[in-house]
Amino acid sequence: MTWTRFSQQQPRASELLYHSLLNNRLAHAYLLTGPKGAGKKQMALHLAKSLFCPEREADACGACVTCRRIEGGNHPDVLFVTPDGASIKIDQIRALQKEMAMRAVESPYKVYIVEHVDKMTIQASNSLLKFLEEPPAGVLALLLTEHSHSILPTILSRCQIVPFSPLAAETIAEQLRSDGVTAGLAQVASHITTNVEEAKALSQSESFAQLRNLVIQLSHECKQRHSSALFTIHDMLQKSDKIKEELPLFLDLLILWLRDILYVQVGRHAHLINSDQQDVLQGQALVWTKAELLHGIDLVMDTKNRIERNANAQLALERLVLQFQEG
Image 1 (spheres, rainbow, N blue to C red):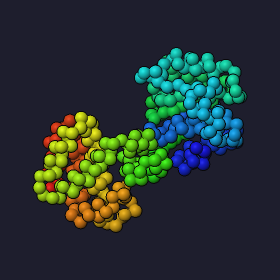
Image 2 (cartoon, helix red, strand yellow):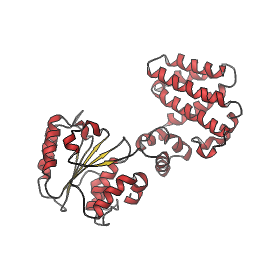
Image 3 (cartoon, rainbow, N blue to C red):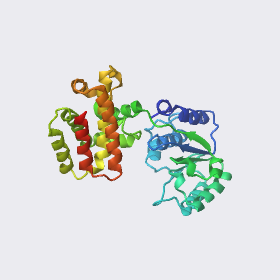
Image 4 (cartoon, rainbow, N blue to C red):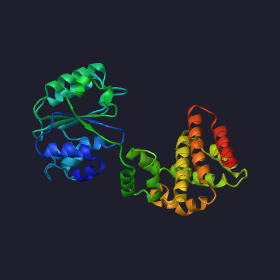
């Protein structure tokens, strides 16, 4: 991946870091902050590679020995700190400071990347603060967090803040397709989560495709005015031990499906999420009314809230089906 590719995903963050690197004006410390899965670690790694890569100037090829060693965590001048258990402890920061004080082995730079910096203990935070106040020459700090409000203000004041936005659904879908996920599942998974890795794990799991098929089946049976939908709910809950954990996902998929039926009815085909199921959506659009779909989405959201508050899953889903059938 190059800076050009990063600029498509996180334009503000990549522009700030790339131009600082290109103009030899890197700050001594950056705080990369934003939601999980936004690409903070990937960009931090790319910045480190761009400092060391012998093949490209102010960028990284990703394929040379140097880039691969950094990616694998095996470069002597690029150090990583992650929580030890629930927190980052003072001994980890002291070890980092000792390592950073040594002369670089293979270049004029030394880089350290601290993940979940908000999980530092008070002692570790104070130790890092002293290090940030008097950084050794040629040392670059890349601090990563999803919760910048949990970091000491004095540490924030010593860093240049680099904000990351949630990834766009199409960006996630494109990444999934490039990884071999079918277009239909990639599109749906990209609207369930803003985390690329979570979306990839979802779309490649057998249960994800099965849950979507159940959604399609249930939305059809709910308009048949007989008990087959209730049998489907019963079978679903009996066949899998994991199904109760997957019910929030099942209900999210059901909301997206009902939304797509509504979009078919109003002619917004370009905005369909289940775009690989247009024929099925077209058929179901003939039996649902707009009012039923809007009310149905509210009912699903209410059912999801009930289950999250520990309501009996089977009773909550049966209640949902009966409400669907009442119209």
